[in-house]
Length: 92
Image (cartoon, rainbow, N blue to C red):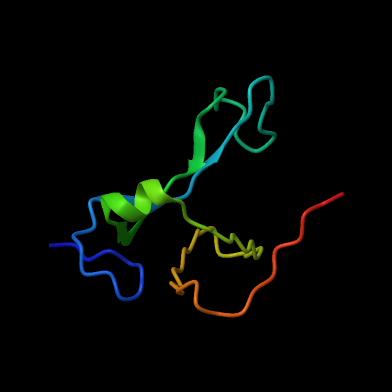
């Protein structure tokens, strides 16, 4: 069984997390001109899962992009609870 990645959750994780980089419509990749719109440069799935409740109740995902020269894409999951101090301010 895959466990939900949310701290403290004991439910089965049935939704797998992943990230992909897709070529947007109308664009041409200079380094890979044969790629078509919506083709992916990369699309790895993570060994990280959400239960049905957390997949549909809402999730804050923060993506930090760090350039590399290794011709690899590496994904990390750092799961945190919403118990940390935070502030949300409405834009006026």
